[in-house]
Image 1 (cartoon, each protein chain N blue to C red):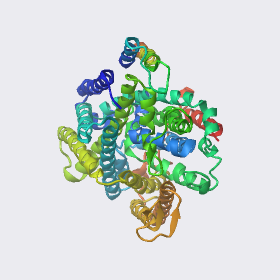
Image 2 (image 1 turned 180 degrees about the vertical axis):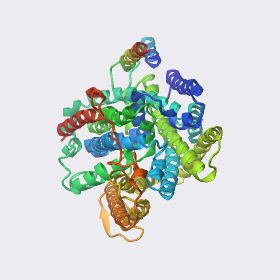
Image 3 (image 1 turned 135 degrees about the vertical axis):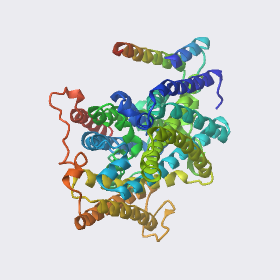
Image 4 (image 1 turned 135 degrees about the horizontal axis):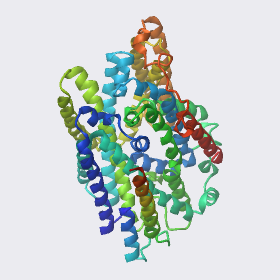
Length: 549
Length: 49
């Protein structure tokens, strides 16, 4: 793929805008709260778009297109049941505790609800995960631009890191959030035309359906047994593993996304953030997944286009970039590549800003230097941004040495997020949950995840203790690891809690259901009520599931 | 809006520019939509200020 002057002009325009946003917002930063939490001043439509943009990294954009080509419309489960229900739940039921507790981060909530050791466990695992994830984003960006454009891996990594560093150092979390909104629109305008053109060329949905096996164009019909679908998952695995544990584990507890909602200007805005975000989120499959299905259909037609080969099959990861080369002339190609760059950078910046807040408040301020001046913590926040980016670059180079680093990242998410959701569920809705119970549950849930991985095999991965069971796919294995981790954490937390002393009710106000005054929606117009909006989302998502049954 | 303007300009300068699998002037249509969308956002921002 060769870029022309117009394509580079669009890329440079984008860089100028993101740096400009950072520069303009610099004047709003005078305290550590401004830098690390946006001072809780961001309007709801901004936080809503940032909420999904922070998650919409290029791994998702490229990965979902690849999955669309490989698994078909079943991939939409990652959105319609694997994201939307959890987003609605966190907005309607959990945000009153996150926002109302005045905690500055998710680990800080755990400290208020439980104790320091629970906070420390989450802070350390989360900090490591964010640096790892940011580094993987850089690695994937470097690899992609090297493969597609022939750019040097180092140049791609350093350039993107430098831009992200500049705008997050200048404007902190606020800059990252506003840039995520820009990046969201860029991703939509960069890839929506591709979806339209590819589907149109493939003969529309009916044309694609006539050319592909029925399992590729039905999302639920072939879920009865793992052998019926290319994903290798069954109904229980998808519902319990993906829709419940992994989905809620991520959207309800991962500080990367929760931080965006907590930056909102009011409780009502914070609650509506994930609910409003659910509206564009439910339509993202049409932009990221459908082109992948179209790519497969086009490969069956006599168009001259075919997915690149890899081994005995296709190299699905190249579906998106090869489609861009076929449907985008110079100009729009620049927009598409800028959108890819933007999606990588939103993922990187999101992870770095989340790392920044957790390091500064939950690790540095809590354990290294307490009671310093706010000016000192602002300086620490800025330096942490630099160090976070540097660690991410280092991780990107380490990732080059392994060929399955992304599988490892998915596994880590399962290990960390799955048991954490059980902890939060019990912590927020059952006042009897104790600090010792929560900590024991987290440790045992994480251990259960490790043991499940060690005792099961999928696609040659896992089974490092013994191979007791084999799953048809790593996806199915991840789902069941998550189910085991969550179940063990849930059970152990309850058991240990019943044997230990809980906090007094006065200490749990604003932290637990039943001891917290829930926000009243009386007299509020329907579209400003999180519950009413959530109902509309549920109806729309149900319709989508039926349409693509 | 600026991106849309660049695309529309590119489409007008080279109206025959096409990608391999499409006969449509993608730059013109996509650029026009982007300019309209950008215009709407600017108008909304002006209404709110």
